[in-house]
Image 1 (tube, rainbow, N blue to C red):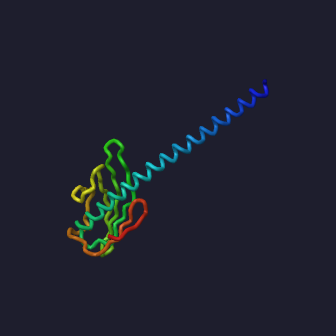
Image 2: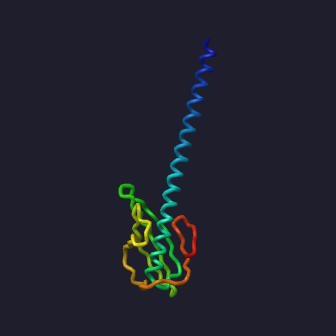
Length: 137
């Protein structure tokens, strides 16, 4: 009788340990999935912002989105942007994007842009997104 109780206790302890480890892995995987989804949404919004920057300033060669933060209360994402022009001038500023800002006219930026000239960039530009993927627009 004592032996069967001991075996039953070992089996139950093992089952609890296995279920606990499985739960931890499941929660971790779900968390990584949410982070990946947020990053994909951010890249989509960065693409819209890049197109707007290209349509607003002339002689742009490269746009680099390098850091983003999301405000969980408002849903707004702030992305740090570096813009290089033909004459190798570099400007850095932040771009704020809202939860439903998928249209070009929703673009808003902060910071002074003394090195950028208003106009439209006609040539292809290199865009590096915050997930380090690259695209030519």
